[in-house]
Each structure stands twice: as structure tokens, then as C-alpha cells.
Image (cartoon, rainbow over all chains, first blue to last red; front, side, top):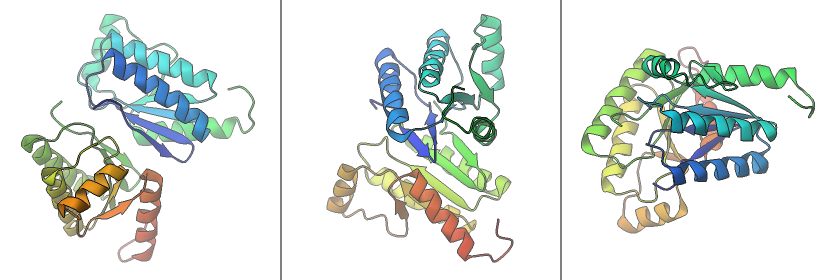
Length: 126
Length: 126
């Protein structure tokens, strides 16, 4: 397992994180994702973390980085599927994922992104 | 990591297999998936195996079982994202996944399922 798959659905990309992230895997994901955003002209990135029981500061930082990377490539990132226990831990730890948008599940995340795309029909800045 | 997440998108379910499957994980996935098909009235199941470099007889059998389970619950299963090397190995091993439909990637798999659903408007087609 040396990379996390990125699935394309129309102009959205879906990343499901299921495994423990380590440095190299996170870097590979960032590289792959930026390359895919460029290649597919994707406007939205969905990161599904429903499989994660624990989100530590490393994953939190990775998500923020991906979100910033995507933003400067004109794509919006939405984190979906966060377990209640994860949300509680994040807030207790003070890791509030500022600047990262969230949705309850993939469907709502896709809705959010679609609404977002409708509101910015030009290639103008988001 | 004790279960593989199942993502719902409309009346389709998406399962991305990224980790090495073992007996208990495969059984949990089958249980979860049948439960989700029933709960969500899903008509299609997409199994993404783009992260797998190797598909052995265990995974082959698991995919066939899931496909059969889904079929008797009135859902179609499509395997997507198979790597060329995996396809070659499968055919060389004689594991041709009979009865399992495949598509090149998630987008084509979704198209296939949508066409399928349009063609069988038996109950109330979505």
C-alpha cells in the first residue's frame, strides 16, 4: 500500500482515507492530488474520513495542507464522514480545522460542492 | 482498521478496497454491505480496487460473493479500477470473475449502473 487512490466523479475528486497515514503516504497523496486536480480540472475535492477512529495533529495538518493546496488550484475541499468521537477529540485538542469545510456524509458534501460551483460559474476566484 | 467504509451516493454504494483483506474484514464488509443495501434501497454497488496491486483467489472469491449477495437483494455490482497487471494475473490464474461486471473507472461504472437502472423500471425506477 504505497498510495491512496483518488476517484474521479465528474469534476469532483474523492479520496477515502482508511489507513494510518505516515509521512511518505501523506506527501504522495498531496503530489497525486495536485497532479489530478490539474489533469482533470477538478473543482472540488471530497476527503472521506469515516474510517478513521482517531484524527491526530498529523492528519489534521495534512487535511489543512491539502485544503490550502486545492484552494490555490481553484478547487474546494470538503471533509466528510467525521465520526462524533473524532469531532469531540479534535475540539478538545483545539484542532478545529480552520478553513476546512465539512459535511456529514459524501452525499451532503457533493451537494455542498455543487452549490458552490453553481455560485461561481466563471473561472473567477472563489 | 476493523471495517471498510461504504459510501452512499444516491442509490449507489461505493466501496474502495485499499487494505489487505483478511477473513474477518471480508465477513464484516459482506455484513455491512447487505445491511446498507437493505437500509438504503441501493440499486448498485461499485467496488473500487484501483489501490490493489495484487488480487488473489481470496479477494476474487470475496468479490464474487458480494456480487451474488447484492444480486439477490436486487442490486448490481460493478468492479472498477482494475490495474492492467491485476487483469493479466487474474486471467493467467484462471480467475475470470464470472458473473461480475467490470468498468474501467468509477465514472464509467456509475454510467453502467445508471443505464442498467433505466433499463429495468420494474418497481419505481429512480
